[in-house]
Length: 308
Image 1 (cartoon, rainbow, N blue to C red):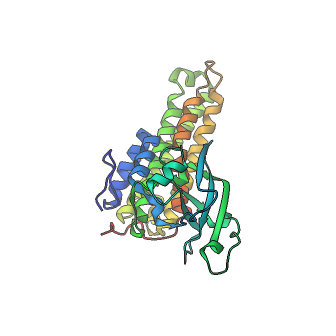
Image 2: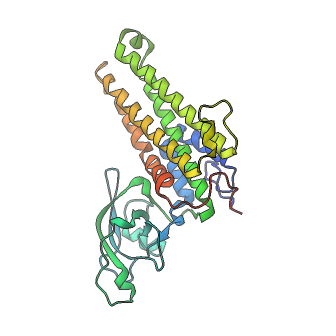
């Protein structure tokens, strides 16, 4: 598989160190554009079991946008023999059907937890209808919505998904610390203790991200981070390491946002708006990262080679 994004980002066949570097830069440059390029090129939800749309089901699948995500309705059936804790729910069997079901752009595949699904609809025992379920306005976060237009990834590509979304999140968080630091002019920082504290915290958060990226870069290369306090991290299971990095990235995002709150009254302009917009742009990446590093079935390994 040699597919790459229109922007030249590496695909599942690339070395994971290159995936980390290029996606981190893309996430720093523009988190929303990086997310759109990623989901537009690769169907990462293809790694999960898919619940087919119930034939002649009523109501038919439909989706509408709400703040932070989508509301999904319709009828599907559980896949035969499926054992995953998560399912991908399509809007239809083909492009025409899902275009008719949605006016929400190109999102036509939604990842939901099996435990949140309602009980099966009544039906004759042993028929597909007995495994059918109906959703009415089920909330799905933006980061768990994608589409089938991209190349379907395979089980061996799970490491690529985890590293790519974690790298985008690292880049977005680094961009956020840059913006927070830029909100504090040097003259203001000298005159205002609150501003000085904000500048110091922004620098500390940037250092945390550098630390996490160093450890992750060493792990994907399969070598220790020489002289690093977490040099033993490379020996940790891949899922454990990526989950730890993801947790720290989310903490950095929250802390950076909180640091903007004291800044809003200095010049009569809500300076935090820039940070809010950036957090909103990065939200889908952060949501997908949490799913990929903490909840996605443990298929593949961080340092194994690309899918042949």
